[in-house]
Image (cartoon, rainbow, N blue to C red; front, side):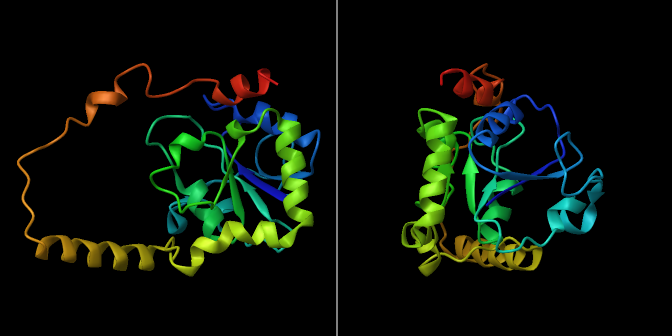
Length: 201
């Protein structure tokens, strides 16, 4: 029912602690080189073709409805390929913190662990969705109006088209922003976020 690709075994987010708790209430198939990865008992070396790891290119079967897309670090404006690969694979991503996806994700396209009182409550909700296909399919309603472009060719074509449109809009701006502001503040990242939400339960 749930797939998790993982290669960084002990990241700052401590996501593995929340996944271990969640696994007490719902089956999770873990892929990769970390302890508990029974499905693919080898490490996932970098794969330049996929801009990630060899495990990223594994075709998933319809056995998996959900994909754990927990980031290595929980930081403002930090979302990596994990989330977008889940969308591309037609699985519902499970993320750690809702606030990180509000501005970039299609509406109602993901489930955020921090919106549940406990890992058990999240597991119960996932069981509910798995047994109620109409409710589960609502997480894909965005595909009626939004195209998911994750593969290199699609992303580049879309990026060039957007750049061309912006250049023809003749908008000028004398305003810039200092990218260092925010990233250098202590509030930009939350170490141990997953363990913190697990310990509240």
